[in-house]
Image (cartoon, rainbow, N blue to C red; front, side):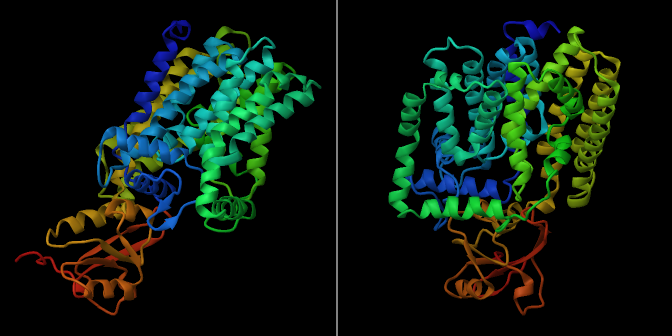
Amino acid sequence: MSFLTARAAPLCVLFLALLSFGIGLAELPVQDRDEARFAQAARQMAASGDLIDIRLQDAPRHNKPALIYWAQAAAVALIGVSGETPIWVHRLPSYLAGALSALALIWAGTPLIGRRAAIIAGIICATVYMLHAEARTAKTDAALLLSVVLAMGALARLWLDPLRQWLTPLIFWTALAAGFLLKGPVILLPVTGAIIWTSVQFKDAAWLRRLRPLPGFVWFCLLVAPWFIAISLVTDGAFWSASVGSDLSNKITAEGEHAGSPMGFYLLTVWLTFFPWSIMIPPALMLAWQTRRDPKTAFMLGWLIPGWIVFEAVPVKLIHYTLPLFPALMLLTAAMLSRAMEGDTSLRRWTLGVGTLGWLTALIFFASVAFMAPVSYGDGIDAWASIGTAFFTIAGLAGLFWIWRGAIPRAIAALALSGLALGWSLTAASLPAARSFWIADQLVDVTASFPCLQGPVALAGYAEPSAVFRLGTDTILTDAEGALAYLEGGENRAAWIDPALTETSEDRILVEGISIGNFRPVALQLFVSPGVPATSDLCAD
């Protein structure tokens, strides 16, 4: 593939990533729960101008630092949208960070696996499923990935080249600070993993002096300390008890919102999260094991393995948690593909067989979801979802065929096309067409169909953050008694109440669906002032 050696290849990869992650950015409704929480809090930050204290309605939101909220608030200001901002505005930081991660991975990977293989790694990054999902989600994870890639790229250069001057340590400490301001100490997992792995294997810790640790740490503190000090003062230390005492401890003890999962969860789900490149995981790991004594491979294994073990050991497991480790797997996969393309190594049939089994399982899963989601949770077969499903399936099978035939350039092109089509199909067609999942959108549509209704809407029996984001910051979350009291307090007010919480037998105007936050069925009935079920002729006069 002459493209892989072209001077403009990195810019082409960036364009591919922007194109890959762009379709579906606006079409996919706001998702419960985390995305809606981040977006709503950022909307309130942009409206209030308070860049220190993070709020979700009137409640403090202190489980994460502020950088992603700043980025989303900046996007709101730059776009110039006032009032109730659409979700795509809040997704812009994640979108740009995801695309820049593909470009940064080329920079990070070049000293580890060579430029041509690093270009392949950039293509993988631009089309892998997990980043497809996170680059379209207004959360921290795509931005964290970018900070990890920059930090690890700088660390790799310092590990391999003793002549590095000030710029490389500066990149490292700046990226480390960004990671801390995004998600706290999570960025330390790949960093410390690589440092310990390489230092122990090669019995050399002296190379860490190349990090310029003293001035670097001072610079790190100058970047992160101001906000942490400010939030500590503003909240009288409540930030630390919420972020460390509650959020972090709940993940370790499997208490709170998320239940625990067994070890091996990420080894099973990586066939999905790394799709369509997961077929190459066994051959890539085999090559890594064979070359494990090479300083470059050792660095990538240190990036990948220790952090993976930690994530598997922690009881609370969400499918995206291992994303900061994926760049190492992308680099190892790209190295395998590049060497196979050059004829330096051959793909062992048994590793391809294992990869094919897991890959086909993932393909069947994604094809089923993409085609059946509109059928099971929407209005029936969706034309665009069906076309997209057929496209990414055929492209993926073509990539599988060419991998087995040893036609590596064709396989790379086909798998990249499959990943591109999968992301588009799910986020722009299939999931938006699964209307039962998007209860907040239904509430907005039905409420707006009655122009005589005024003021904030009350909700009883449904408190998902997407409803607050879509209905407005002043949405009232209460119980049935509180909702009815609100209706009695004024004219032309509206409340959506779970019919199971009222004594009325009338069900004239209902919204029904599945809560995507917990996959439980939801039914809500529209009540209006002075506390009666709404009728279709409500605003006829």
